[in-house]
Image (cartoon, rainbow, N blue to C red; front, top):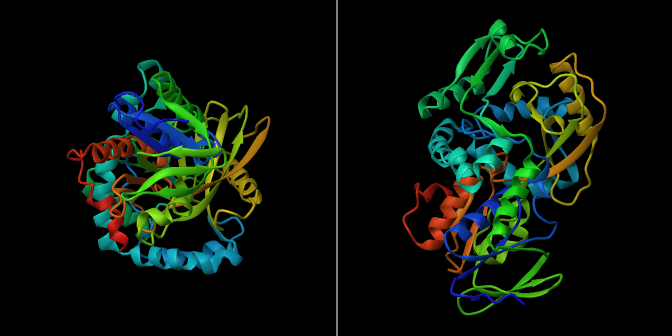
Length: 421
């Protein structure tokens, strides 16, 4: 059995070995703690395995914007649209959806932008500190992102998004059709305009990135266990033991980073009803593609992104409201494949694979990174939505500050659990 106070270093247990939990475990270890990292599926086997790999420091615009509700019927009516709902799940999703609608106002969108910008300022420097130089150069590409449209006109949402980016200091360059195609010559001829976000980047292999962080963690003495947490045993000041599918583990300090499953595990720990739900996302990865863009390309009308990966071209996107338990509908991945071939008309490939994962989403697009008021030995880091890869280094740094009781490197207030009281 692992002893919580083995050696002279305080012990921390991190639950959840996706990109956020693994980055937190490594950062805490480097702060001098003995750390154990648990996950029911293993390191990097959830959303961190199959995401688009984007490092989107320019993504300071929240998901909920004014006018978006008017788009929902059109999206739902379109079999190739970016949104679908598993109707039996709708009653359970309704509270989350209502809060998402309430968040869709300009004042809140603008207020959310600065906390996102502050948070993402640590992305590339954070990965440089968690990886060695060879690892960083082999995994991280600071290539920029290209957004593309089939029209010259912009929707009101697009115009507001650009205004928010400008106000927040995000660098961008508007492009005409020729300039867009100069950057990516294989784009479809109907692409009329683009936007280059030069400070964004991507990882060429999200799974390998997470597992490299975990390897660094283990090489420095960290422990990784494949365990499913079933319940907690509480003492006077908080949880003292974890009951798992492979026995009981002692706990001194707990950091919960379980992604979309965080509230299934953590409802007893928060003392607050947190509106965490999942936006189920899909990808198709096309091996040996005849077209490989030089950077991630976002189709802003069809709401998907194509990222060049080590294993081929990954086309990722869609939002499916369906909860944690429903089986995948891989027709969504097939739609992405067709749309990718429409965006890149010359695209053929050797083989394709399909995947579905659960984005852990909160209605206001900000994660929870906080200490429990109920139990002072419990910390939370979840709810990163579409931006876990981007937000992991900043999350790790902020969690380390909170655990140590030192002044956080950015204002931690916007990520507080208390905003849901």
